[in-house]
Image (tube, rainbow, N blue to C red; front, side, top):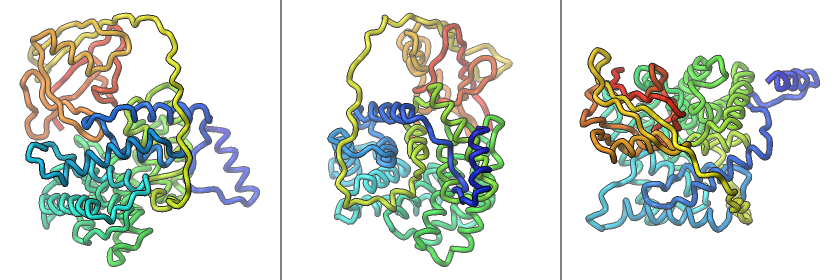
Length: 428
């Protein structure tokens, strides 16, 4: 970090103007390792594991396209067209508004024409989603989107990237929410949501799709940028390590003198986290990879689709011989009220390196424990434990006992030997 600051001072003394939001260059082998990690996720092409964000992240890196890349995009296209266009009555689970928006970003990343009969149907579906959410928010802004303002901003961004005009009354809902600090997640300001809204505003500003809203967009963009900077932690993150990649993308597109050093601090903290293996979820990793190449989602607008791209680098297929993993012991506790006894309190043996989801599956297989999840953009989210569904303004909080909240979800957090995991019904 100190060397980065010295470089900026040196450049300013020479009269060289540096970008107002940049990060220190990451080691090429570290960037390559992150790329290979995302490539590994491309081997998972079941409908439940397809993730457009993985494809977008790779397209915004320096890796050229190859067969595996094209095959993944083809799988995405087939899945989304079947989900929204197929007349088959048994096709039940349509992707959410956010997933459809990410898919349209992937289509742009793959230089595919969205102005086709099927493509236009998906664009229309995304606009329909936004209209439905707008009505739920209401004329007086007293309601809330059925999904989230994060997905609302992502949908506007995806349409803007494709140069599709979004009605002013739809954009106004996001502008109002931004200026009135409605971007909350369990009573805490959501940096992820603010960053996504900021990217949407930056795109609208650059594309001039809503010229009548330009002063409001400019004002909201500045307000959201200031709020993101206020959320900087002592470690250098914006909110937390997993919200910081998207926050950096937002600040890169809406820089200010105040963000200059904050961007450097966040970049150094993220590179350190990457070195320590903190990024096991493909969503934040796919948002970080473009940042390591000084790119953002808005870079999709400048793709040269006439350029012939050669294949992605082949992943290293050599599998090193390793010893059989040792078992570890993890204690699982469930409580609905700190004053009452635990609903569940049991120890489980799982292989070293197992995720929290593996522990929950093991507990369910052994009986006397049940849980349910729903798929979200960031992976499975716990919706029920021991048959208990959270009430309004309640959720199942994941804690490392006694009271340390987990920043990762059940599919990514890996408990240590002897650790106690507490699933606690919490309010916000």
